[in-house]
Image 1 (tube, rainbow, N blue to C red):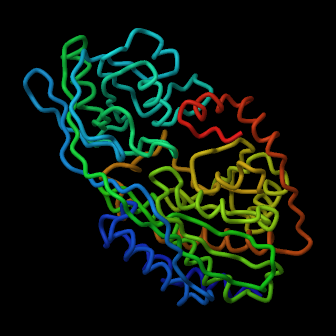
Image 2 (cartoon, rainbow, N blue to C red):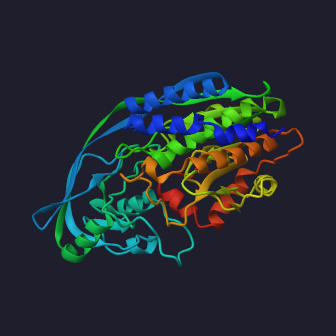
Image 3 (tube, helix red, strand yellow):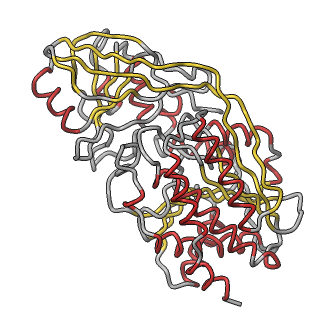
Length: 433
C-alpha cells in the first residue's frame, strides 16, 4: 500500500508545526520558549497518532544573554556573546589567527585577545568545531576569544562554549561577522582591544519530549531531533526543521504501525545547543543493548538531498542506500564519525546511529547559528519528500529481519583517532574513553 506516501505529500502536520516553532521566538535551552516548544511538540506528536506523549525534565546550567562588545580604537565593534561565556571584561593585544588550526595556537598568546574563523581551509583534512578553537585559546593562555563568521552578510555567529564538568567557559567569548572580523584584523592587529560580556548565569530546567509508535517491544528504535535553538533567531533550519520532520514521520508511521516490528520512540531533545545535554541525559538512563538504532535528524530540509553519516555501521549504510534506490531519490552516505549532534551520546558506546542532514552546497553551517536562520530559507517540498524517505527507512530498520550489529566502543575510539577527531574531543573535555 502506498496511500501513506500521497498523504505525506499533502500533509500539513510537519510544516504547520515548524511555523509554530519559529513563531515562538527564543527557544534557548532552559528558557520559557524552549518549554513552550516542547509542549507544542508533545501535543503535535499525540495529534499525529503517537501514544504516551510526555515531557521528561532535567536540570541544566542556565545562561541568558546580556550585552557584549569588542572595543577597538575607541569604537565598539558589533558582536554577540557566545552562550555560556562567562561575564567579564578582558583586554589584550589583538591577534588574528586566521582559521584557528591547532598549530596556529603554538605562538605566545598569553594575555592576548585571539580571533579564529568559523571554517577551515579546503586542504585541511577535518572540520574544527568552535569549542575546539576556544579551548585551544584557553590552553594557550588567551584573555578572550573572538569567533569570526566566514559567511558574508554582516551576520555574527553564535554557538556555545563550556564543558560538561564546567558548563561556563573560562574566558569571555564573542562572535563577530566576517565584515567586523576583517575590519578588526586590518586596523587593530597588534593593538590592545577589550572584550566585554554581560550574561545572567542561573539554575534552569530543560526537557525531552517522548512519544511511541508500533509494538510494545523491549527493544526500541529512536527517531530524534532537538527542540531548542539559539536565542538570536527563529532556529528554522537548526533545528525546527528536524523536529517538524519527526512529527511528519510520526504521522506517516501511525498509518503504517502494522509494518513496524520494533517499538519506535520519538524523542525531541532539549538543550542540544549547549553541549548535547538532553540526549546525554537520556543516554545515561538507557540500556544501550535495547536500542536497535537511532535516526537523528539535525540539519534536514535545508537542501533537497539527504546525507547520512553512518558512523561505520555497514547495515545503516545499506539501509539508507536501499531506501534511496527504492524511491529513485538520490541520497549520500559517509562512514565517517560525526560527534556533534544528539546521536553521539549513544554512538559513543557503539549504538548504531545515523546523523541525518541535507546537502546544501555551502561550507559549514551556512545560515545556521546566525540571525538569518529563518523560515524563508526552507521549502515545504523538501520536508515532505524527506519525511517519505525517513519514514520508509524507519520501517526498514524496525523490521525483524534487519540486523544491525553494534560496534565495540574501542573501535569507535580507534576510528576517532584515525580520523584525527580525538585531539579536539580531548581538549574540549568530550573524550569519554
